[in-house]
Length: 344
Image 1 (cartoon, rainbow, N blue to C red):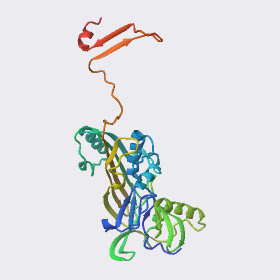
Image 2 (spheres, helix red, strand yellow; image 1 turned 180 degrees about the vertical axis):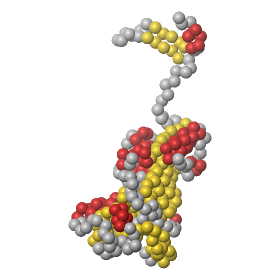
Image 3 (cartoon, rainbow, N blue to C red; image 1 turned 180 degrees about the horizontal axis):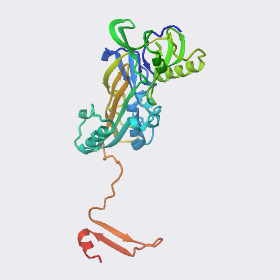
Image 4 (cartoon, rainbow, N blue to C red; image 1 turned 90 degrees about the vertical axis):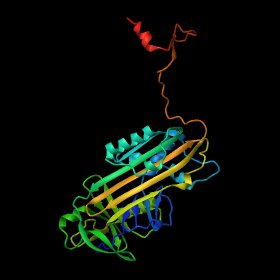
């Protein structure tokens, strides 16, 4: 098999086609896997979709549409192509509630306890108690190692860029054990191939060499279909080589298309959205941390987030028999302590 040289990273369902020295003007974080983009570099992660699903399922109870505005982003998010069930529960945290200092503390304590992480986005929101504001939050965290660390290879250019990029992989000098890290999904020619990198856990890294400008969901289908059709050797052989660039990025975005519009049939307006991607990949493994949140304002009555039936102040109690129209006992309670002192 011809050498797998200059592998273009395509983390199918996550990101593809860019070098470590990323220019914010040439990269776009997409809200869904089927979002279209003309950006040179594109990323998708499921964190904002989790947030959207939580808001839709717990508050709107149906697909989100806006008054007098047709949002393509909302339409795609409503499809819920990614759900919490598509990832291990240990890899994400999500919550929602009325905006308050207590909610912020709860989030900070939860992500510290679950992931030993701090938030990069909570400072960008107001936490003054406001019963007319809802905050929905999610963090997605992954940290995994390859079966055996790959070799660090000589640096070199990437595509038409001659700037030196750090690479890892397998070459003629590598130990044979590294071949077990890799499964060939298909190799049709020098510009059409894909591999799977195994890790010590359940995570897998898929790399697909392609210049396709299709959406991520269609690219993933290409990988699946081509892998099924491939009849060649899927074992990474002694004379095969692998070359993958180190990647280290941090990006933040908002989805303006769903902000500032009344949600149809409600008094809700999505005030602010945010999603971050902190991604690192080198010869040892992959680290991913992503946060997402949206804040929602109710423009009339305060939103209901579960009712607290706390009988901790004056109340009245009645006892009545089934099917009777008049109770047989009534009691107004204003001082529990005094009442309880009369008990035997």
